[in-house]
Length: 88
Image 1 (tube, one colour):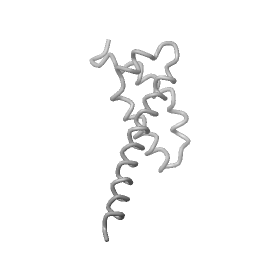
Image 2: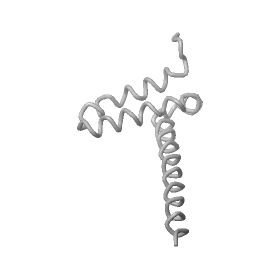
Image 3: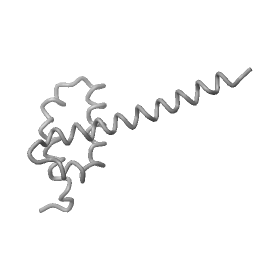
Image 4: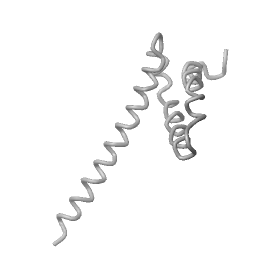
């Protein structure tokens, strides 16, 4: 038993990707580590879906995080484009 039981599965899943992370170049490793850290905020969802397809739940958390970033970027682009159009 651990202090944070919901982290057990996600920690195991992320740990299973360690050998992949180990061979990444420095820039990619930083991006990979950041991506994995962001998955922890979805630990309850991953815990709920994890059995028997642990990696699917992790991938869904990563896709959700990427989708949020894409939507944020699109909103920023739209705001910038409107600013350019509105100026005389």
